[in-house]
Image 1: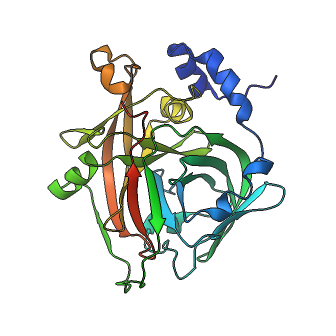
Image 2 (image 1 turned 120 degrees about the horizontal axis):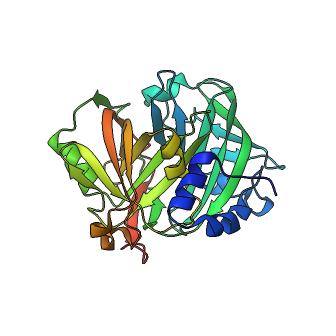
Image 3 (image 1 turned 90 degrees about the vertical axis):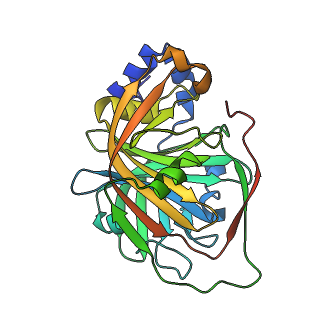
Length: 306
């Protein structure tokens, strides 16, 4: 059987004693979107994109749009994302302008109302201001753990659009620190040094992300044992994080460096028993608008949150 995990993933799997479970769970990874999951992107109103900028920074962003703004082809080998619709915000995300044909991309779809998610990784085949088409290299579903259930509802009257609001900086002010430490959800993009990019979800109780000064201290809960994110960190310790303000229709993007701590046993309870943490040191941040065409309502938190 061909090896599906790269050296960084194998290293983390072996160091944590989860190699056998990773091989078992890795059977879900395929070279195309599974037939049963191909309609899934077309039903979503959002997705997460991850990529590496020309400067070498890893970024992620949350793109919103009406149902159908993303779609897989019949074979599951191509994924299209509409970036130019009236209710799609992408031009307000400056780093996204640097994506070019041939670049590696990671895409994550999360259906918050059902806690279903689908990861799709590949290369950009077509890039324009209005459309992104990706040739799929691998795709697989994920378990529902740590996803807070939310509904996206269209308001009775469409709110007035106030244009794209973009702020940027390098230091985290008090407002941004509060945003981070009160979050119950964020997304993370990571990249292998040879190119492939992955986008993933992280969730927990509000406050699960700590701040040590301006560094983020993040627990790694029990998961599928494949370690796509931590495996990338092992060979390329960079990340792009995005935090959502569900009430204010904003996103906070961060890019920076990562350090792994796989044996912090004194904090094992807060990691769900793994003892694993990672530290993120932000270098740059961007705050931008999301589409205001629907409102988010929290239904309940994940029963798996430590």
